Length: 227
Image (cartoon, rainbow, N blue to C red):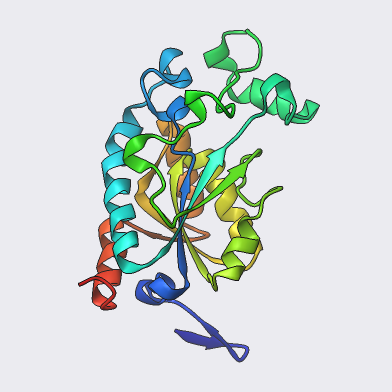
């Protein structure tokens, strides 16, 4: 910790991720994005990075639960018939998914009431975890995420999930703008486009703290919160 302008600033990883003031944010671990028979898998989108990331995130989730860390799952949500999509959001999605949709209509995914909206079983919320539905890339936009974080005394968010360059980075930036410390769990974020993942990680390493899941879990063990 250092003092700057009379203000105490966390600088060490163990300070940043201290269980009492940290939340693990798990972004969009849903069937449509991750599983071979979900929408993205059926379209032939490369899901291989997720296959590698998922067991690492499952281990970090288990460590968070043991340490008493607040866990919040973001759940991407799109209402049927485009009810939650503005014209600009439709244009955004058309551009983002241009290759996968092959000049077809906008992709429809993570609609409530469909299997694609559900969390995958290996990364599903546990009892006591919080769930925030979001309708845009950032988990802060039009949601109660900030209220939940502040209500639970959270100072630091650890970002995990997908996609690195999309909902993860968007939520991380908004977390910083809302005065939270941000730690990126480097082996617990992934994308269906490796070049975009790498570009996002390059940008984020100059803005946020980065640490792998083992280093984060080790801080929780050293803090005495895990037996």
